[in-house]
Length: 153
Ligand code: CMX
Ligand code: CO
Image 1 (cartoon, rainbow, N blue to C red):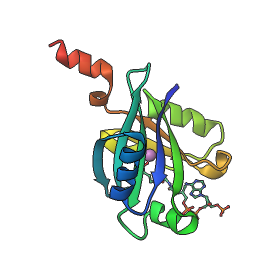
Image 2 (image 1 turned 90 degrees about the vertical axis):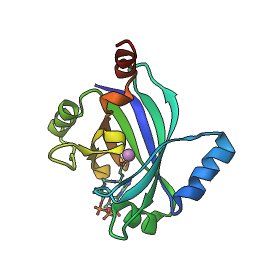
Image 3 (image 1 turned 180 degrees about the horizontal axis):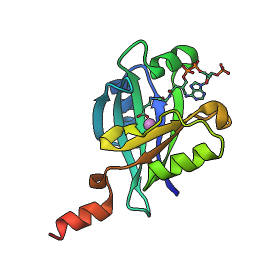
Image 4 (image 1 turned 60 degrees about the vertical axis):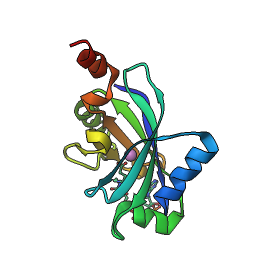
């Protein structure tokens, strides 16, 4: 079951400058940064709010690290802007298979590694009314259930 907006992915040319804009304009701070070589991006996650399912919602700022990455290709064509949305679920395997069964193209056979050790997959934008859609299961260390379990021991 999809229970939250996990993040909105925004493609940018210069990650550091874009992070500065989000900090100066909205007061959002960087929660996490990493390079995901497989996805071809350097990214910053700005945590906006916690959610009822123990997860959180983020803005994901994405800068390509390779000219042949999907985000570099998208920036060439569109310039900066909203690249994808991501829904959070406790079980990306089951939910993505159900959605595949409804005739939507799921891009990966098995979920792959996403930001902060999450597990992710994508739905083809042409099957989703023009929106590249990601499904995410956060790592246990990024849910409040895990945090309260670890602090109570
Ligand atoms: N949103 C909406 N439409 C998109 C899109 C996007 N982000 N990316 C591509 N499209 C559209 C294009 O506009 C194009 O439409 P037209 O044929 O009408 O022109 C069509 O899809 C094909 O686009 P393309 O430029 O030829 O791109 P590809 O088919 O090579 O790749 C996609 C598209 C979705 C398969 C590829 O971007 C992909 O695999 N995405 C998933 C991985 C990803 O995006 N990783 C980066 C983020 C990582 C993270 O979130 O952690
Ligand atoms: Co994403």
